[in-house]
Figure 1 (cartoon, rainbow, N blue to C red):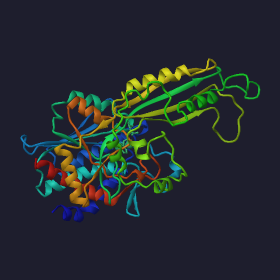
Figure 2: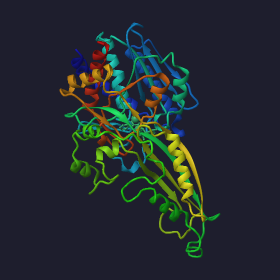
Figure 3: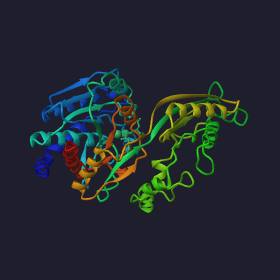
Figure 4: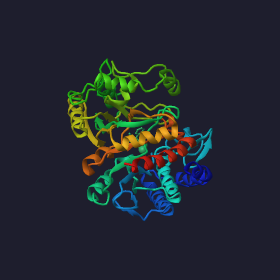
Length: 452
Ligand code: BES
Ligand code: MN
Ligand code: MN
């Protein structure tokens, strides 16, 4: 029985996950290129040990893609499991209470970079598969596609998908890389936001100047950039880029009501984040603001002197990285274009502005009336004792829309992290319970799905 199998093997499962978490597979940092490969090799070997027919590393110009499969019988349905083994950079390091690549369990939670996003969640799938092989309960085919570039835009995965449609042929995509409301209120993510990500460069004088000699007479690019950025929202919290909202899918009142029915405690939310008040687009709740409304945020801003003490300087350049979260029907290339045109148009003559698109992707909405979604619901009900609530997550997994477009496949987003797990932040963590219940829920999903 699956519960027994998980219980009697849980220490080994955790030990293995810890080994994976010890590998600093930071895809954005070229100094970690060899580590990223090491994580891919580790997963490949674990998949082989778990009983796949074959597992291979597919080389790309960037980091390798792990592909593996177990074909029980070609006439049975096939589940394609997607996940990523790369992680975000651990910075700022000094804010970690324990080193990011030395996993520890504290208060029932695994602390390490990637524990939740996404190594911990990927590894649930490997162990769920192992369990089904050992217990001989696997009654469908499985393909695994685990990439090492999700956190940097999945560029090479896109090519892999386009070039390997036959190999990836399956009936449904299964991903655990999203959030759960809580263990008491299980949920299934039914929508993700898209993304447009740009970098802007504002140039004033041809060199850094003495801020006393020239200050007041020559445009300061940091002052100018700050003003330009501030103008990108109006007093109602709406983005001021012309055309930005034109294609936004407006939800019906019934759909909005459904979103707001999800359990959400604003006081706890504020308390957990250490803020006194939330903010955002007027007329929308916090769940709507993160789930179904587009946004614009500065992710980083720099320029001038930021070292110790004071240096009087009027800098030549200022920079910012800006992301826009998109919702269904907004096209990321079009939004990047609208941004660029607008941003250039609001620049005063005293500076020069350059906008570079970094990456992007489309939003995704997954069907909630499919056999796969029903199987996922049944699985949560079985393991958590409660029917899951469909939710819209604010994060992005751009590859979900690509799977639909290129492979014609729908995705089930069965995530087991919490919003409060500090993914991308210092002290990322993942509940041991989430990990173990996740394995059980995945096994249950296979069972319910293969009944169809
Ligand atoms: N797993 C996250 C996305 C996510 C987090 C979805 C929480 C739902 C809830 C993923 O690894 C991620 O971080 N995606 C990036 C986008 C990517 C193109 C870099 C993101 O959302 O910023
Ligand atoms: Mn992720
Ligand atoms: Mn991530």
